[in-house]
Amino acid sequence: MTKVIKGGTVVTADRSYKADVAIEGETIREIGPDLKGDEYVDATGAYVIPGGIDPHTHLEMPFMGTTAAETFESGTWAAAAGGTTMLVDFCLPGADGSIRNAINEWHRKSAPQICSDIGYHMAVTGWNETIFNEMKDAVDMGVNSFKHFMAYKGALMVEDDELFASFKRCRELGALPMVHAENGDVVDLLQKQMLEQGITGPEGHAYSRPPEVEGEAANRAIMIADAVGTPLYIVHVSCEQAHEAIRRARQKGMRVYGEPLAQFLILDDSEYLSKDWDHAAQRVMSPPFRSKEHQDGLWNGLAAGSLQVVATDHAAFTTEQKRMGRDNFCMIPNGTGGLEERLAVLWTYGVETGRLTPEEFVAVTSTNIAKILNIYPRKGALVPGADADITVWDPKISRTLSASNQKSVLDYSVWEGMQVSAQARYTLSRGDVIWAWGQNSQPQPGRGKFIPRPAFSSAARALSQWKELNSPRKVERDPLNIPAGI
Ligand SMILES: NC(=O)NCCC(=O)O
Ligand SMILES: [Zn+2]
Ligand SMILES: [Zn+2]
Image: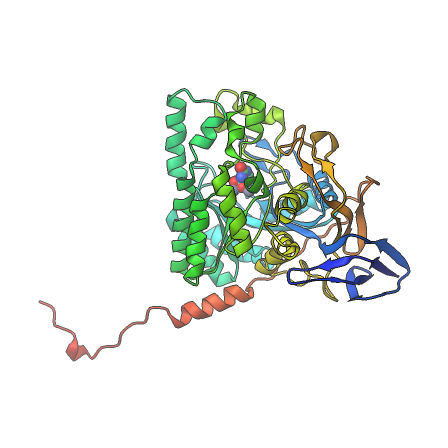
C-alpha cells in the first residue's frame, strides 16, 4: 500500500521544491513530481517538512518533591498536534542511583503510552564506579547523551571534577555530554539573599538566576569539554552571556552546540513581575525568561548558526503543584510547557517575520538535532529510506493558543492568548497519520517506538582524532642532558 502526500512544497534544511512524497509502510519510498499511490494525503497549499524533533522534555519526571503532570500519552499526543513526531526525554536515576534501572523504568512508563517515537538522554547526578560502568550500559541500550546539572545544589548538581570525569567517560564511549549551565553555588547564595530581603515570590526566582550566572557556567563547561576533548551540548540557552561563550568556542574550532527554547525566544522576564502570583509562578523555570535584548541575540544566533536547535524543556506542573512554593519561590517546581506550540510560535515569530527562512526553520526544529544526536537521516530528513515522520504544515491555519484548546493536561498555558498563523494539517509518524487538523481523534497509545541512537557521531570521531593528533607528548631526553639532583 502506497500513501502519497500530494501537491505540497517539500521543505528541507537546504531547499524548497514542489514534489509529492510516496510512503511505503513506515518509510519514504520516493520524492518527485506526479507520484501515484493507493491513498492520498492532501498537501495543496502547504509545506511538507520533516516531523519536528523536540530534544528536551521531562514527561512524568519526579522533581522537586512532585512529578511533572504531563504523561507520555498526553505529551506525545500534544506534540503530534503541534507537528512534532519525536521527543527526547530526560531520564533521571531513581533512589538506587542505577542508570540501567532508570532507563528500564523510563521504558516501563513510556512504552504503553507513546503515540510517536522517543529517545532518552541520561542524567549524571553524581560520580562513582557504578555510574562509570553503567554509562557503557546506557550507550549499549541506545542512549548516547548524558546531561549534567551545574545547578540545583544539594539535589542534582555535580562539581567540576565530576564533570571532568564524566565528560572523559563520554569521550571514551563516543557519547555526547550535555550541561544545564548555571552556577549552582551562586544561585544558592542569591536565593538565600532574596529570602533574607523578604522577596519570597516568583520574582525572586528570576533575580537569583541572573544571566552572568549562566554565562559563567557555560564558559566553565566549555573549558572542561575542551580540556577533555569532547563535543558539548548546552541545553536551554537563555541569554547573550551563554550564547557568547558558545559563539566564541565555535569560532575557536570547538564542537559546542547551543539549544535556546521557544519560550526564551518569545516570552520575557516581565512575566515574573505580574501581581497575579499564579501567573508568575506558572512561568518559573531555570534558567528564567530574560529581557528582549537577550531574545534578539538568540534569534540572531539561530540565523547565524551559532545556535543550532530550538527545544522546549517541556516540564509541566499544574497550578496546584506550583503552589508548593507559595511562601518560598525556591519550592516552586521549575518548568514550563511548549511541546505543542513550538513549531507554531517559531513559524509565526520566526518565519513570518523574516528572522528565519523556512529552511532554517526545518534545520532548527528537526534536522540539526537529528545530526547532533546521530539519528540522521533516519530522522530529520525527507529522503528515500528515511522514516516517514512528516508534517504537512499549513501556513493558512491561524489559531489562538489557549489552555482551553490544548492537548496538554495542564490547567494553564504560558502561551495563553497568543495568535499563531500556521498549524499542522497532518502529522505522520512512520507513515501513519496520527494527527489531522479538525478531526481531533487521539492517536493509538503504545504505537510509538524507542529509537536507539548509536555512539560515535561524525563530530565526536573527528574531534577525538584532532585531539589525539594534538595531545601533549612526553619529550624524550638524553639522561645526560637532565641535570643531576642536589
Ligand atoms: N528547566 C526547568 O526549569 N525544569 C526542568 C529541569 C531542567 O531542565 O533543569
Ligand atoms: Zn536543566
Ligand atoms: Zn530540562
